[in-house]
Image (tube, rainbow, N blue to C red):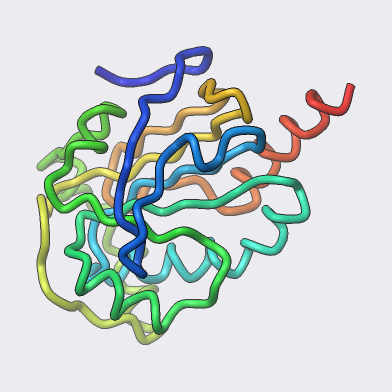
Length: 183
């Protein structure tokens, strides 16, 4: 079942790239931008992750944390994190339990959508190569902005494997929470 704005965010505990368990409660008191990707071998997911982590200092200045969930094993997640800029918590959910608790689903139609091709080609042109397949290949992405009390304020469920909001959109949502908190 999908989560909607106003819902309490489902709790989670997942290992990060260093093997430390990270829980939703670790972010209490500050907004969290929680992004669900596919797996670290996916060129589009690599590109999206880099774009998000480049914006991590902006999220931090806005008082928000950034976490990206992958279907990847701890070993592959750790190797991937070594090639990433710091700033985002990279979390592994190879069994897909947290994907399921947030209602993030897979879709063959979303996987085969023609609009994916330009994004895939852009990722490949930028040098992101395909690595090992993990999890469900047809997994859709999603993004949530969760306030400091653990309530979902923004929910985006991708309709295709490339359908995620730009970092600037997620940052604006997180910044809006800061303005609400300050008033």
